[in-house]
Image 1 (cartoon, helix red, strand yellow):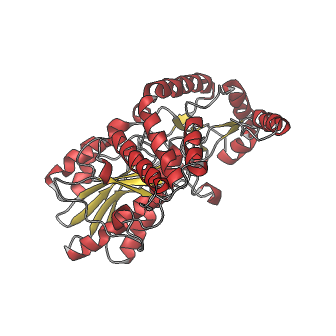
Image 2 (cartoon, one colour):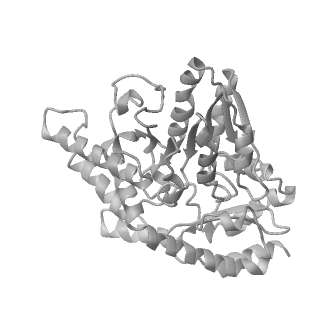
Image 3 (cartoon, one colour):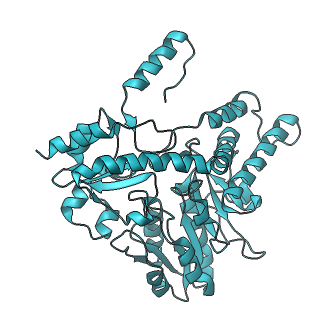
Length: 397
């Protein structure tokens, strides 16, 4: 997956560098850019470079048309209306807009209780910490030992003054898919808003996100073979009423006044194209990642690994496992020339702290310390699994 440069010599050099690099198995952190997405973006960088807010000439009109098209393309993935899509810089901003943006409504209506889980991404947990600092009461539901949230535990946590329930669609570390439809059903009889951080599921598990009771969905472009720096918050109406969000920044009135600033049309076009391709190519992509998983499981069997999370509920492109007597840091060093992997979330892995997700699942210390996360995609080449297994086996001797 090298970058094609301008001259023949440079192109050859780029290909040689790509061939010598380890195979990338960290797609839950970020994905490679789909070539079709790149081509679509370049058109709006190089040719249709108008400002979508400029209504007096064809350049601006072309940009606005593409932004509206992308809005519809993102909405189609989750069965929403185009005008329910708010473009942001990514799922982190979307999470903040969903949670902090609801806070004034909670203040005004005496609903200052929030339910979330112990296994959320920091993009949710840290805004919740801020809301707790402001006086909101936050209840974090623990996961089962399999890494999923019991809908009955959510039901028991929700109160009459609960403003919002925030639960991720699929965990970024374990790949465990959460029972979102069942949780949405639990909330049917309540007024609580349901926010889903769908960074790992959007465009990959569309059936998870189609339930009409999901009010808010956070999306990142760079998790679905699109560019970094673009995402969306899908804010569904309830009947004719929009979710009562307040902006976090002001000026310009773009995105219904919820996210001001000049729209980054090339990035929005890239997200739209990535969303479109996620629907068109869903089956072929799913088959490819499933075949990679099957080969991995067959090879790893010799190591008798401990898989972290209920494997019957796990994304087919993600594996979190620990090899007995093998430390994760030593494993990553041993594998660094073969595969590029991580030992947890890319947002926190540099701190070398125990995974809050695995700790919340109640796993033993040695399992947590040895945890490796592998995540791949349809663009991943064949992996030399036997070499991976041999290097891990050497660490046990």
